[in-house]
Image (cartoon, rainbow, N blue to C red; front, side, top):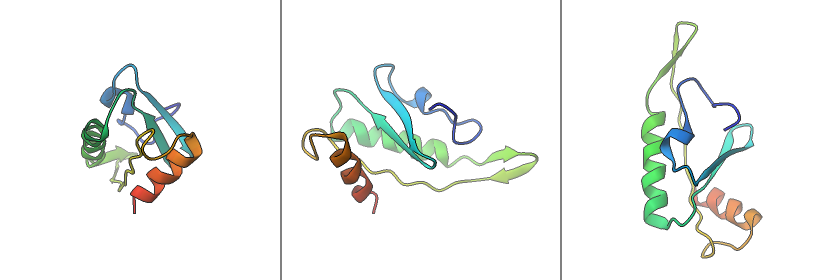
Length: 93
């Protein structure tokens, strides 16, 4: 990510060097996991969710965040980025 969403979090530490992490909106992020299937994507999602469970401190105040993750697999869930993002968004709910 260009800027970590909060102190101490790094998606890059949780994914392979060949994968890509990007901020797509102010509070939405996307990961592109090359040559990964549904199982691998779920493993990465679980790692990310577990890392987000840890509270963090800013100016002596403790914060914690909630998150949700939606998974879309190319080409099963779509053949273009817009469709894949829509499917991942739907998978969160």
